[in-house]
Length: 158
Image 1 (spheres, rainbow, N blue to C red):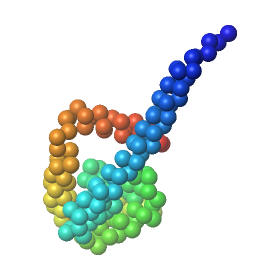
Image 2 (cartoon, rainbow, N blue to C red):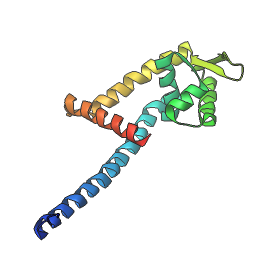
Image 3 (cartoon, helix red, strand yellow):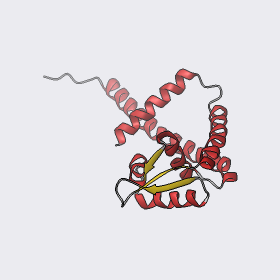
């Protein structure tokens, strides 16, 4: 035999459930409202170097990994290989990347050039300043918790 909740408790449960659903809808709304301005700010910062956020992703990956194949970069960002190929071609035109045949002759190994390293360092300093400006007044513990939540969300979505 299951006990029925008094009507006032079932209404309260329903209100809490609705509040939880609204909070989640609000979460995605707030996330999306933050994402676009951040990308726009990055693009403005990178524009003097003929870069964009999408090109920066490739440079960032190569800075972290020293060299990589198109397949590795594509897999890391979840972007189809043709999209990465176009980005790499543009970065090569700018003189920021170099490519060489990889272990498999069908694949290229790409790396930042000395100029690419220099541009990366300049942009990285500016991006760090942007990050500090955007997160000003937010406690380190809150930022760390936010990173943890984003990592969990990423794990859940994959």
